[in-house]
Length: 543
Image (cartoon, rainbow, N blue to C red; front, side, top):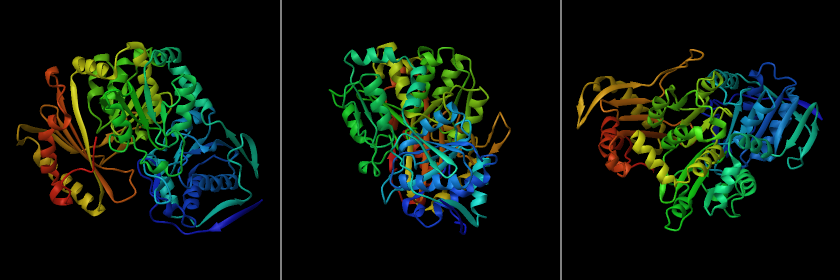
C-alpha cells in the first residue's frame, strides 16, 4: 500500500446546496472532481485523526466506485475507523442513527436524495457532523472555500475493500467495519413505537402498500414492515435498490409515485400507502382515495404524539420550514408549546433539537422527523402513522378530517417550475425583491397585503442569521404566497411557489385545494409575472 499525494486544481462549481454537493454523474466522474471535494472536507475537519466516520449511500449509480475512493482517501488522511453499510447501503436516517449511537466524529453520505439516478442521472455527497445532522452553513462554507484553494489530495494505493462482506477489514491504518445497514435503525424504531400494537393492527386484515421506488429504503421496509411487523409479502413494492432506481424518479410525490397513487385510489385499494425517496429521508402518506399533504401530516403527528410510546411524555416544541403551512402552528398553540419557523434545509433544525427546544420537525417537501436523530426520516413517519392508526382504529381520511374539524384546514399547494434558465429565475426573484415592499397595504382582488419581505432567520440558539431565504407575501386573512429557488436540483433552476389559505368552516373543507386557492394562484402569477418571464403556462409539478 502506497500513500500518494496527487496534484490538482480547483473546480469552481463545488459549492454545496441545501443538502450537500449534487451534480450529474458525469461531473463527478471527471478526474479529481470527487477527490477534490473529499480532500477539502477532510482538510476542514479539525481533530478527525484516529476518529470514527459513518459512510454509506443510497445505492445509486457510481455509489460503489465513490465509496472505494472515499475509503482510500480516509485511510490516507488518518481516519481511524469507518462504519460502512453492507454493499455501500445506508439510508440517510440510518447514518444519523449510527453517528449518534456510536458517538462517531461524523459521517459522509453518498446520495443525490430524490434526484434521478443512472449514468445520465445525478450523484451527490454531503457531510454530517457529530450530532448526526447535516453540516451547518459555517462548515459547508469552509469546505467550499477549501475547494477553491486546493492544490493536492492524498489517497492510498490499495486493493478495493469487499463492500459485501460483514466484519472488519484493514486499509492501511484504517479499520473498515462492514455492518448490517438495518439492525441499529430497527432497534431504534422498536424503542419509539409500539410494534405489538402495529403488528396486531396489520394482522386484523388491514392492507398496506409501501413503495421503496427501487431506492435505499427497500431493505429497511422488507425487514421492518414485512419482517418485524408481519405485513404480508408483497406489501413492499419496488424493494430492491437499483443503480438507476429501475428508471423511476425516486421522489415520493403525486407525480413521480403515480403508480402507488393509482393503486390507493382504486375502490379496492389498500387501506394505507406510503413511499420514500432515494436516500430514505422523505415520505408521502396516503389513505384509500385520500392524500395527506406533508404539512397536514406534521400537524396530525403532533396532535397525536401522546398516543405513541416514544412521545408520550409530551412535546417540547415544533419546528417547520418557512414555506410549510401553518397547520402545525395551530396544534402547537393548543398544546401551549412553541412553534419555530426556520429556512428550508434540515440543518436549521439541528440547533433547536440539540437545545431541547423542539421534538418534532417538518418540511413541506415531504420531510418529517424528530429528536430521535438529526435528519428527516421517511420510514419513521410511516411507523408513526401506523402507530396512530393502530391506536385509533380509524382510516387515514377519518383521522385527517377529524383534525380539520378541530383545528380548521390550511389549504395548501406547491407549484414547481422546473429546468428554468438560471438567469430567468434569478431575474424573477430580483423583481420580487425590488417590488414587495411597495405592495404592503395594497388591495389585490379580495386580498390586502399585510406584510411582504425576503425571509431572514436568526437562530435562537447561537444567534447566527440567514438572509434571503424566500419571498413572503402575507395577507390580512392569514393567507400566504411564498417564492423560492430550490437548492437541490442540478439542471437549470427550479422555482417553487407555495400557496396557503386557512378555512375554519367544516362545510368547505372538502373543496379541491386548487379551487380553494384559485385567487392566490392568479395573484402569484400577477406578482411574479411567471408566465410572461418564463414562457411557462403552467407548473411542471403540483403537489
